[in-house]
Image (cartoon, rainbow over all chains, first blue to last red):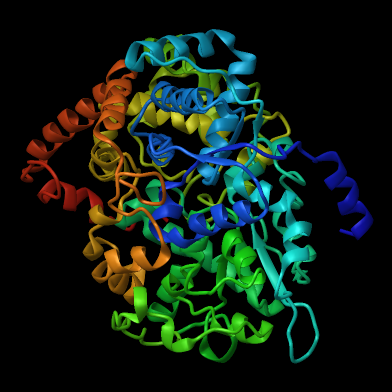
Length: 354
Length: 233
């Protein structure tokens, strides 16, 4: 699609993103697998002078249970209503989930209630009966990647590094992968819509990189909820990711950027699995294609220590990207704890170069 | 309309997700599951739309309704704005309510999903929790995960999280009073009832299959978690 056409599509899919005062809803998957990312998100917002409330009473939204069908929709809607009640009790109106599955659910619930006020009333009664709580709906719902997108230029202005190869002076080539539930269900709720989402592209361009278009750009990573959770189904999951790797590899990406908590996990780990099963790797010199969350990438351009960001928890090493950009870091600190405590190091994969 | 079809069409996911499907097949063309399994969301929607009671009962007992990954790619492209993925949610719900899910290999897996995800929610307040992830069941997580698990407290301390702390922050302990609220919501809204049905119907099936059934990672759990007849593709 020619650039003018994309810009027209993007103009049709601009959403309002609140300026400040956020109620933060944490992600189960991001906390477990990319714990440094949520730490970085709060640090970035603090440095931008934004107010964010991190409520310890917040729980899972039950999203994975809902989409693997073990809980009724009424249960999920009532847990969502409890989170809205916590936001209301905090005196806030801007709801910011970290999880894309959660973002999809909050969007779905609000849309459903808009069309079916009788269901909203029933959920209010459920919540009151179960917890004694009442709630107001958020005035603004934005995913945490929307917030980073909104402040991408402020981050660029503060940045220590650009997404540019220091040797060649050329922009890094980036695959952006959008979580399915960000905008496939409700395109008008995502920045740029479902076909040409701008939320990650905007970050990459603001920070000096170049986005790659490739045939399977909108293919799911393959989480599929029950398709990953149950061991007998995991062929589905790895096959979906493999389809993407084979489609993007000829374009020689330097990195993959994601906004869903699950996608970076699968796009990272399935590269390891394909290398173990078939001896195939998709990056340079028998390495993989490094995968980043948007918080990690923002933290990296801002000059945060890569090991403060938790980049040591990736199975596909990120050092090729750090080296291309010229990030200053200590290799020997990668697997150390507080005060330089030696924590050993992971075993090496049999094929994937680390 | 038959009794079971009537139940299916009372589900809001069918009411909102199905409006005169024109059978164009766009959903099947875009569907990741259709690229992997013998699966066609178009055919599923067509069967539901037919309101044929016997065919719908067959569907509720089938392998097919469990192939969908609920990515909802079908929603974006449907020219009628239908959502086959949402209709799947309704079919799976009814299949579990009626006990039909134990008639298929893929359906029987719901017992494992309930015991992994459902119990993590009620015990920890998270859909998944690192302390409850059995590394042996997840070889794909790689050696870096083994290293993380072995050093979990030190790594979290290094990253400045709230792991195992009773404060706000990443991987904090969820307080008992908040878990109690989740539990009460589950009781009021029917999740506990569904969990009981998944366990009870699975227990009956385990008896038919002569597989030991207890709780946690028992023989029946491992059977449904790992069995793959290889005829799904």
